Image 1: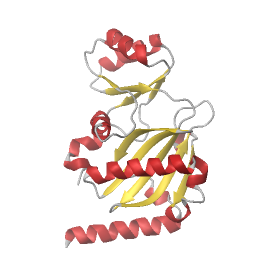
Image 2: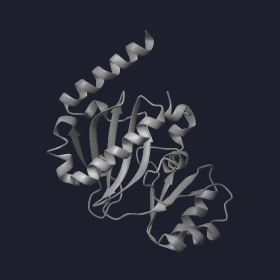
Image 3: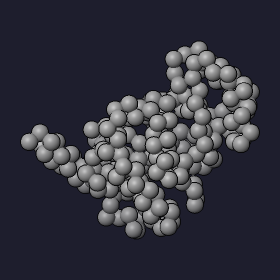
Image 4: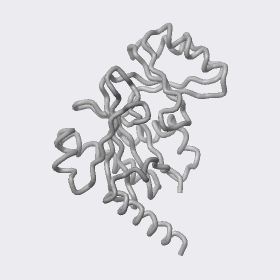
Length: 221
């Protein structure tokens, strides 16, 4: 089952953004770049309320593919002009310095683990393939580890807002990503195709794959 029973939303970050925004979840300002847009006007309007740097992300891809950090207005215009010659659609959002990507993995309405990724110094991509640092928190240690690293009040708000999305998504298996810095957090994206499960610590992987197997068996019966 796709997110909110809409298969296309799995690969449509702008639709995800609108979906969670109407649920009252914290989101960043967002605008779209696509074929034939009047970029100078659009970028000028967006920059009035959102200073550079900006982040440009493909609307329908994952795993950090094609993400661009634009430091100046001229760079944004040139990048947008290149995008306009392709069939790609990009999202534009403000860039937050020092942000950490926090992912919550739910299976059958239960929070199983939390994974965080942070970029190397002077970087902006948290992917481990690009040198990013990854930390995995298992459920039984949330109180001692995750709550400590991200402050208990913010941690609980992230979990609460994730549960709001999860309960309204229509998906039994879902990962929800947040951009977190100090006392701020914003929705980033969500997906039902969680990557990296085979690289989880053994004690977490056993529970995840056991529950997934049970879920599939129940669906087939």
